[in-house]
Image (cartoon, rainbow, N blue to C red):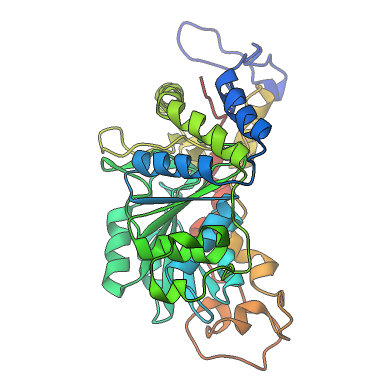
Length: 417
């Protein structure tokens, strides 16, 4: 690619020039790191036939709780289960509302539907790609039971502002840390702000344990309600009288137990995570330090002197400013990068608030869209009366930043080494 100065300008690969990237990347993208230590731990469980026991799981829970800095940790079969349990544990029930950013993986919000609640989608900030505190404040009603905060693509959300809004309305905050294990917001570890945090630890995440999820909290009531919901085999841990009175069967009719092969791998991965995460941060910061002076491109990361830090940098993104490149569309910019051998793609996750499932589909056979059957909001997601005669779904709420994601956000390779 053309570089002004001592080097002769070359035509872009897109217009017939040579590709800029021709070297084999080696192992810089290889993930997860699985060593003989992981294999020994997993084989020990496998050979003992203890895949469905909980002894190793309780060990990794204690270690995660210490690492996270919270009193309790409860392992789940996946992050989706941990998020559903967190919603139940903070009191999400039929007719309630859960506010969630529209730019995220579906598991951040959709488990609310299984509890009879409805998801109220909120917009994001352009610079963090996380929940916009101002839009959050506009969407809270007397029916709001919980707010899900996603630290998207590893970037810390604006937790001071979000917690101020939540505290002013007495609403619980659930942190989804699936993208940001070990990240910091103003020096404090992500997952330590809300009443409860949940996270995926599947094999593609920065803290990979095979397939699993984790719920962490300081509140014993939340911990015990999550046990009651999906861990019937651990009801001996329950101390709350209202839970013990109906112990023995899972309150949610679900089994959230993690396979101990993943628990064993998780213990090993956690021991090495901070060092491996530091290497990811070093590599990604090196990349962005070189690229940041480029017109039209900004890194998706907190300011370096803010005390905030990316967590794992899961699925990195770049921010694009078309006005600095003469209005060049992001799609064309990415085509040029792809031609050079750099796998950039416009956008990020699909804006969930526009999907037919959350606007039109009658999931549970109520005779009208679930978004209406389980809520009292009117068309467009705005607060209003129930509409029992309306069959067509409501028009999606307008979230301009999330809807423009493919115009200002693009993917960059996730460098691990």
